[in-house]
Image (cartoon, rainbow, N blue to C red):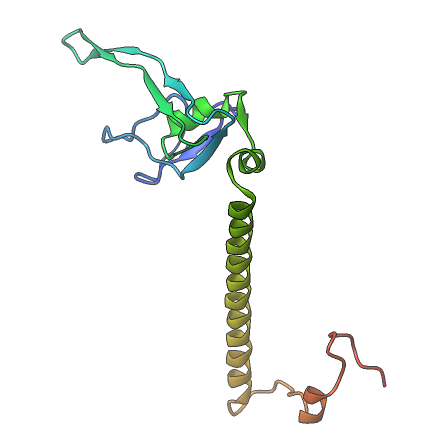
Amino acid sequence: MDNNKKTYTCLNCGETFSAPKWECADGRRHVVEAKTYYSASSSWRTYVAEERLITLGDTGRVRVIPARSVQFTRGSFTTGDPEDQFALDQEPSMISADRWKELYLSTDERNKMKERELKAWEERLVLQQNSLLDKVKQQQEANAQPGADVPTIPPAARTSGARSGAPRQA
């Protein structure tokens, strides 16, 4: 496999592949993690796959696979199809998510989006802090068991000291 080729990992079969192998071993189309693309045009349509001719087995019959296009709605399109992603990654007219927000979202919508992002960030921090507290409790419980030779912090040292986390000076 060429090292310069983009590789994808199929969510169905787990295979790592690159263009133009768009099908799993069982014949189903590969599915990859969804990605959103943005366009300055609100209802832009573009072709992502050209018409193809394939020869069927030993019969020599030719089957026509029609060209495929995708339609952007309100300037965005989300896909988990690696062939779509391959074509759209090469499309020079795509714009950034930030530029799309400027074009398509009102100030109120942008503010609400920022509020949701901030709330999600705060929730992640709380979960992370709770996880760390659980680990500390488990360590303290393990240290409290008989035979543990781990020194404990005297109660006076635990309750005093600077809140900033800076070491105390003697």
